[in-house]
Every structure is written in structure tokens, then in C-alpha cells.
Image (cartoon, rainbow, N blue to C red; front, side):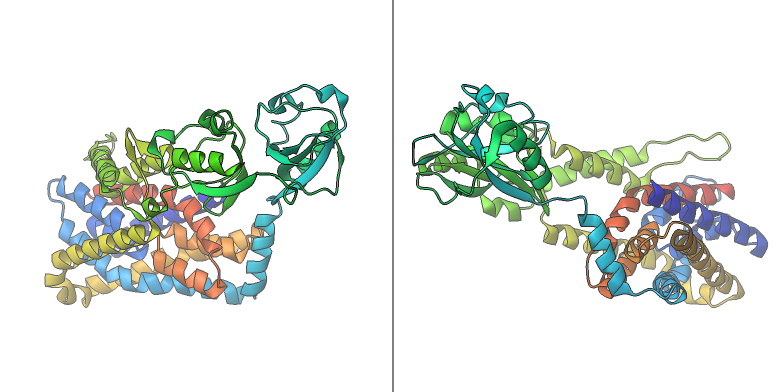
Length: 459
């Protein structure tokens, strides 16, 4: 919330500076909208402003494109320059800031551990594992069990019955395992991972589309194959496989059982690793179609001469966030490998910039290197630097924002990938990307709306 409030302040502050500067310099609002978009390196807001100008009598989309092209180059330098100015002004040691950021991020994230426990609590005799008090509250999973007076280990599932004297192996965080041990009994040095038995484990990838959205408990692997899911890896996060945890495409499950059960469970889950490199274009284009329709929907504002729209960027952005949350569109699975994501991203921005250049290029040099054009460049520099420097200084001084967070915030508030790349290169880690991603969606939508408001004020 704090980061998004700062980002909103940067966007709105830049918009007010663009409007005030245009009035002071006697610039058309169409040019002000282009300067605002170019000075903040936000191409979708230019597209939205041009669309608004095209729907207004007398609107000049070409003027906005030329002003955008004039303000854009120095904006990229200005955003990176702001990071360097703040670094020097506050005497920031980037390496120490990066280390401090990683420590703060990981302090509340405990790794999963194993604990072997003897069932000393006679009240648990004859109960199923799922009936153990505190099992759900502590987020602990029991994966292996050795019966009292037996030497071989067996896989333990939710419906495995416990007896006094059994030894179980539980998986969870250290804190939760200690709480759980008070219910079960005492710890033991015996390691069920090394005990004899036919139990093994395997890591498998969820690619079976029929299972998407189901919970770990709904898989029923323990009842069908005698297999227990102990943990789940999703991206960089490792989670305890609780029964109510919903599954997503590409989740990696660690399962425990005998070889026959593991083989059957693997086929059930899918484990088709090659599918992780496949790009599913059908849901991409379905999402784009829905996003375009949403972006074209007119939002009427009484004091503006034409309706506002989310545009060809804002609409797909909202739909993409929704689909990413759901993970599918009906039977269509949404999954895009990172290399495809990056290729489409760069290809799209190249096409857009090429179109902007084709529209503005004919009269670019003869316009920019004039009194009017120099006004665009000067106003663009102020629109770029002033909000960033003010927000950066306040964030560091008032809230003590870590430089990793601050650089990600400033880059994200300008939706500027080159600035993010500079910040991550300077930090030698991906930490700034966290704040960048946190503010990007709101920033993008605000910039699209503000650019249209500026453009339509001239009507």
C-alpha cells in the first residue's frame, strides 16, 4: 500500500506538472499528453491519449506522438540519473542495502525441516493421522511411519492409523514441528529416511490439466496409490502440502511411497516436463481479445468531451492479472515460459515504437529543433525528474526505504524496464524487481487514464 501510494503520487504529480507547464508555456494539451507519456517512458499511455484525441473533433494524435518522441530519450537517462543522484545524496552502499534487503525478506520465511517423533500420547492410539489435534493449525505433514516392534518403514497418509509407540516423520517449519511434538510425544534420533523399507520419494511436475484447481486432498493419492504429498515447490517458494492447498500448472510435488505407487501417482499427476517449455497461444489470444474489448469500453465523465477508456494496454493488463490468478480460461491452461514472455514483450514494444516513429518521423526534426520542440524537451525533463526526486527523498528520509525497494519503486512508477535493468545490474541481484512488480499494474492504469485526461482537457 505504501509503495503504491508513492507510485500514484509520482504519476499524478507528473500529470499536474505537465498540465501546469503546458499552460505556462502555451502548449496545446495534445502536446502535453505526449510529453507526459514520453517523459515517463510509458508508450501505452500515448496510445490511449492518441485514441482519445482521434475521437475528439479537432484532436491531433500526430502532435502527441511528436511530443512523445521528443521527450522520450532524455526520460530514459533521467530515470537512471535519478537513481544515481539519490545514491550519492544519501551515501548509499548498494551492496549493504542488497544484503539488508535479502535479510529482511527472508526473516519471516522458515525453511521446511524433518522431525522424527515417537507417539507417546496414548490419546492418539487408534486415531487416523488426519484426526491428530493441531495437525492443520501447525501446517505439518506426516510422511513416513515405522510401527512399534517393526523394523521397516511405510508411507503415512491422512488415513493411516497411529498406535502407541509408533515412530513418525513429520515435515514442517521448526517452530511448527516443536508445537506439534507436544501433541505427539518425544523426539528421537532415529532417522526414518535411512531406515529399511520399500518407501522412497520422487519429485514430479503437475501437468495433468484435469487436476488444475483441485486441492492436494482432492488428488486422493494416499487412498489410491498409498502415496503422500509432503511438500510443493511453486517458483522459488517451497510450501507444506496441506490438504486444502490448490494446485497450479507447473507445481513440483514431492511424493512419498513405494515404487509402484510412485509410478502410478506420477502418471496421474502428469510429470510431462517438456510441457513447461510449450507456449499455449490459444489462451494468450483469447485473453487479448477479452482485454481489447474491456479496453474499448467507454467510461463517460461529465466534464470531459469524450469518454475515457482503459485502452489497448490497460484492458489486456487487467484481464491478464485476472487470468493469471485463475490459471485457466475454461479448458485452456495459461502457461508461458519466461523466454516466450520476454520475446513477446520486446517484440511488442519494438512494433509499437516503430509505429510511433512512422507517424511522427516525417516532421520530427523540423518540429523538435524549434522553439516549440525545445519546450517539449524542457518540460519533459521536469516531468521526469521532479516527481522522482521528491518521492525518492521522502521515501528514504521519512520511511527509510531500502535502496532496493526505492529503485524498484521509481523504475516501476515509470514502467521503465531499462531503469529496472540498471538497478538490478547495480545491485547484482533481482531484489528491485519485487517493488517494481508491486507498483506496475496500478501505475500503468493511472498513466493511461491521466494521459487521456490531459489530452481531453484541450477539447
